[in-house]
Image (cartoon, rainbow over all chains, first blue to last red; front, side, top):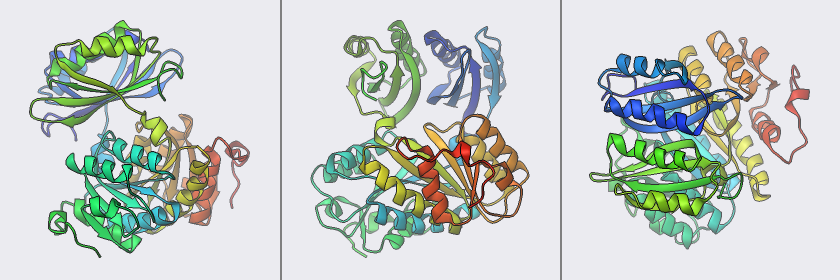
Length: 222
Length: 222
């Protein structure tokens, strides 16, 4: 979001790299009543770093950027399109390489149709093996920014993975499972047998334009 | 990374949600000499927020977590596996839905073989239309965490997209282009005609185990 929409502002700040510099920047932002929602060290060089900030509740973007630019530790302050505006909502697909690839084909194809009409939906994937690795990845979905849905794409998943699916569902993240062995399908919001169709339906479930309410699908298997 | 590896530490801090609370947390971290590399508001509820931090140069993780936990505004502090450990390096694939899906199939299949051997490679995608949207997305790759390579997957890309590819290459991000019309193939490190092969070669180029040096490939077309 650009400044103006709910006081949102995304900026790149070039600063000297020291433990204290981030603290100085956040103090100035706090002084303007801004809420910091995201910070990432985008580039770190010998003498300086470029830090990317996403802020909310910014009342006067020009004044805030001016105050930051006036700091001795700051080289430049530039507004940037936010990652929400460029990459939008994310779907995370994880599991076996064969199935993850086919879910991606379906989800990317459907996301293309939505993004052409002005939405922004990204499809992110990781192929993984093993109950602990998969459970860690499902739980980490809640720590990734902008995630709306997770797709479990494998042939056998249960135990700790199913518990992780229940945890992220409680945080409001939609979960879709391929029809597979193990207890993960029972933990998911929606179960789909064909991986391409699973990708398409997941995009429909998170889209702002599609008329597909995953809450009405609970327990259904396609 | 867990604490110990270069003093890296990833923690989830539950705190009261106010503009000043992040500033208080970063001051305590700065006091321990820790460098904050990443901050995300992972969950925001009525009365509290959960903030995810990645830190470097932490000399005593226990003491730092103890000092944070002792703050009045902090409810809990928990160590978590870092996103680098769970999701690893990222490849971003962007362009037309048909081509992006097939690049994903190749990249996910190859990443599976590497991740089974202990690496962590994610394949992230967005289907997009239009020179400005594509150029914005390529430039934003430099602001996304953990990105090692970008794949341009379309039939015609040039102008502002080619300039954006040159900018991210200068920041050390490997660029791979499908063989297509426009000036993007000339701007890329590597040009590959088949989208599945393009996905496979991109994973090989960023892998720590594969013997494929993209710097020796400059100007080659497969």
